[in-house]
Amino acid sequence: MGEMSRLSESASEYAHFVFFNQYEEEGFDEFVDYVLPAMNAEELRREQGPYSTLVTVNYEGHGLVLTSG
Image: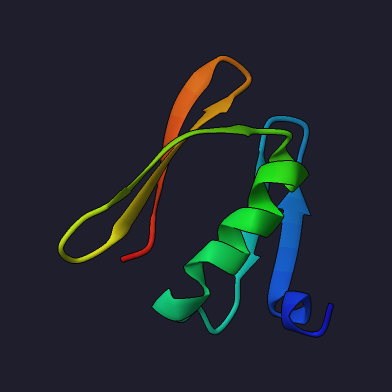
């Protein structure tokens, strides 16, 4: 879990944040693989565009889009 040491989390009563320190676009899949279980979110769709990857997730009934770039 050495790579995960680049992740830090912050939470309050109303929000939960996951920060990927020293983010590099090549690490986007690693970030998504960590964030989805941490948020208890479900991946709905993944699209590879010309400049970035878009991951659509279901989080507590809300649609969120994570982007690599």
